Each structure stands twice: as structure tokens, then as C-alpha cells.
Image (cartoon, rainbow, N blue to C red; front, top):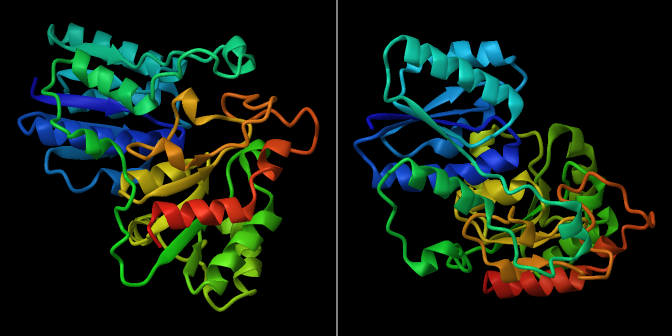
Amino acid sequence: MNHLLVIRLSALGDVALLAPVVKAWAAANPAVRFTVAAPPLLEPLFEGVANIDFLGVSKKQSAVAIFRQLRDLHADAVADMHQINRVGRALTLLWLHEKLHLHLRFHIQTLHKGRLSRWLMLSHLSRRPRRPQYLRYADVFLRLGLQVPVLQDSDYLISTFNAQLPISTVGIAPFAQHRAKIWPLANTIRLATLLADKGYRVLLFGSKEEASQLENIASRHQNIQSVAGRYTFREELELIRSLSVIVTMDSSNMHFASAVGTPVVSIWGATHPDFGFYGYRQDPANALCANISCQPCSAFGQRPCRFGDYRCLEAITPEAVLAKIEETANL
């Protein structure tokens, strides 16, 4: 194989989780050209490896429009890391196009998602945890016959990656797509203040829409600063890379941090890290869950709390998160 197309169009966190896996496999297979088709915003995540090219593809396009972007690549194979109908239709058109042009060795390997059943959620993970998503990505490359990256066991965990920084800077990314995955804002304010009072520099991460809330938190202490909406995505990644540790929800920021090698302390509500969407090479011991009887209640966090009080998130205290931060980054 000379040219492999890797496609994953959404969600942003899942694409970010894919990035370090692609980079590891590309580095182990320097004779293979990897072209990654993903949302244009995320191109910086795939930089740094010579044999990786990037193709920005909007997730909102039709199957025909996606096919038209892919057909001139003339790849030898496709790693479909998305497995949704629209991408599947585009790849069917691509397969027919290649066969009609006598590219008979062209083939497609698809991600096996291992979809979560309602029973698994209600059983509270009484059986084995689901296979991590990053290993499912790696399985696709394995089925394509690529050379497996040589990694030490320790390479799969990040615990003190940035602990040697002379000034301890802690990031907090307090938002997520769904309410059932967001820690109460009062707890975020309390945590940021505790860190700032201890002399740590605190950077708050979020979108432009969340900037006003984060600026309000930052105004409470001179050691707290909001960076929301101030930088490009590439610049934000560099800021995240420089952190001693970052606190996130079950959100794309967890995967952005993992992609650049920054330790993460993650807070989980409706969802659970054993569902397989935990940060790439992060230490599962740094995932904070209340582990109450009703948790987890959702695979992706889109369902509202049936009690209305989000008790799984309320039960995680700022003091517990602070202790985990200092333990994780040796602060």
C-alpha cells in the first residue's frame, strides 16, 4: 500500500482522539502516505509527521459532495473511522469509481463501533469495560496490514508529562456539549479560586459563546485568566501543551489535551470512562466519578437528569478535584 485515506468527520473530540493514533501509525509506516479527511479546524492536530497530508472536509456536506472531494486522491485503501450512513454512501461511490477505473486492489476497512446497549448502561458496567475507542481506531490500521507502532507500556499513560515546568499553570475547561456532562459553575469558580489562592496560574478554556462567563470568573482573582475566543485553535493547542495539567469534562478538550500530551483530570457525570471514550494515553485513575447508583445513565450525555438535580456532578467537590490535580502533576 502506498496511499491510505483516513476519514473521520465528527465529532470534534473523536477526531482529536484519532489524531495521536494516526500519527503513531504514520511514523511506523514512513513509506505509506496518509491523507486524513477531517473538519478543517482540526488540521493542527495532525501536523508534525512528514507522511501525513490533511484534507479539510466539512461534516455538513452531502455524500456526493464528500465523494467529489475524495475521488481525485487516488488512494489505495480507506480507513473509515466514522461508520455513519452519509460517509458510507460517499465511500460506496468512491469504491465504484475506483473499480470502474480498474483500481482492483482498492479496498475499505471500517471502524467497528461496538455500539452501547441500554442494558449495558443500566447494568452499571457490571461486565467488562468497553474496548477503548483509540484501540478500535488502531484495529482498523491493523486489519489494513500496516506495521504496528512499537510503544512501551508506559507510553499509554501520561501522569507527569509537564511537571517539570518552572511555573505551575493549570487549565480548566468547564463546559461540554450536554448539560449532563457539565460540572456546576459554582464548583468551577471555587476550584479556580482555590488554585489561584495557592499561587497557581489558572487558564480558563472555552468557546467565544462561553467567553463572558469565563471572563466573569477570571475577574475574581489576578492569577486567573480567560483565553476563550482570544486565540486560534493552533495557538490554543500550544497553550494546552504548556500546562502542568488541565481539568476537563467528558468533552473535546479532554481529547485535545491528550493529543498534545498534557495530563488531564476529567470530571464525569451522566457518562463513564469505561464506555471507551477516555483520553488517549491518559491515566484512568484521574477520571473522577461519583459512582452513585444512577450513574452512568447515558452513553453520550444527551439525556437530562431524571431527578433534575445532576447529583452525579454535584457530588464531586472542588477540594477533591484540587487534590487530584496536585497528585497528577506533582504540584
